[in-house]
Amino acid sequence: MRRHKDSIYRTLRRLTGDPDEAYDLAQEAFVSAWRNIARFDPERPFLPWVQRIALNKVRDAARRRAVRRFLLGPATDDEVLRVVDDAPLQDAQLEGRQAVAQLDRAIADLPYALRAPLVLTALEGLSHAEAGTQLGISAKAVETKVARARRQLATMLLL
Image (cartoon, rainbow, N blue to C red; front, top):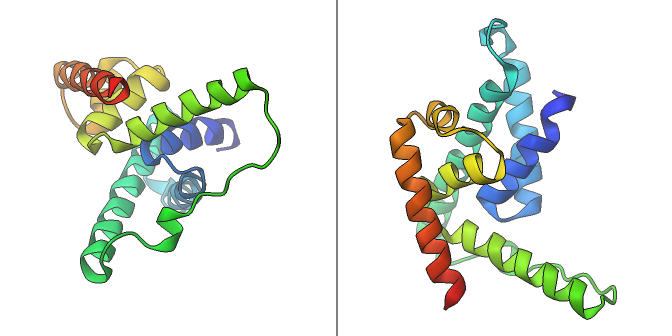
């Protein structure tokens, strides 16, 4: 599990857009994997199995947020407030970080159906077939969704 923690965290961070939530979901995914290790087939690779668990944790969290919004109204303080690093940065570093943050926000704003295939293929390096297996869709569907996600990102970032 130690070998895969960074990969799982990166995937979850890109899917959620929130480092703290990604950390929490990664912990939940590994706890769930540990509790269900008897179900793991040792003939198959471990990473795709735990990635699938992590993706399910993201879906569960999204459902909980939707219910919370429905019951409590718009965003809570935790969802609105972001801690800002006060350390002085040079202009180039600041612009680079702002560009990465803007891209992270744009990716997080994509619908899950487009965001997940994009993150798994473009950022985690999975093939369309591997991502399709993780998501339960065909490789062609992954290819189509990635193309749509990239078009939406281009539109979002150019506005």
